[in-house]
Amino acid sequence: MLWPQGPVCFHCGSIEKHYALKGGRTKPSKKNPHGVEIRGLDKCSDCRKKFTVRSTVCEEAKLPLHTWLQA
Image (cartoon, rainbow, N blue to C red; front, side, top):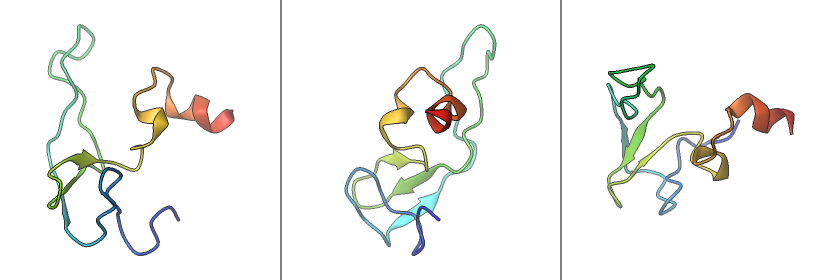
């Protein structure tokens, strides 16, 4: 629903040049020493930055996504 024509880079707006990344992980923590796998991670071939569906204001927030959806 968010991207009817396919993924769009949040940083540069590129529509066509991107590819899926497998095995991307978050930073290690005490709870998850190897990090958590990031699903749905894409990388833009134009600006070389990573993005996901959550590449919005809520990505940098400390609140979980379900809390944002409730608000």
